[in-house]
Amino acid sequence: MLAAHRRIETELDQVSRSLAAGALDLDAVHRAWELCRELYPREREWLATVHEPAAKKIARQQDEALELAAAVEEAVEDRAALARRFVAMVQHTIIEVERDVFPLADER
Image (cartoon, rainbow, N blue to C red; front, top):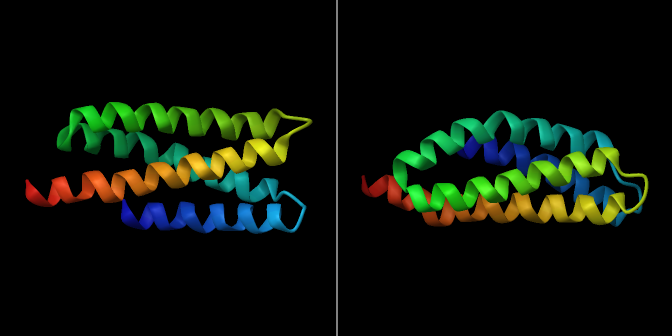
């Protein structure tokens, strides 16, 4: 999972760079979205075996991230704001998983 997180973060970094330059890279948003859609089912299953309450919370955050990515794809206006929220939500979720759940898995 750690490797998948790094791949997602690479694409999120590209999205952030493009936003800073004033030209949203929709291809990077799409790649990050696809990587999240591939990872999240496996990650949810694993999280449920480690810590059920955290798994439920993180699943809600993951759902929101996927909805934001879809909104970026569909939006005509405010794409940049939606993309920023998508980046922030995915980054926040990755941090929570790695900071709060990975150590619990080590204890098992």
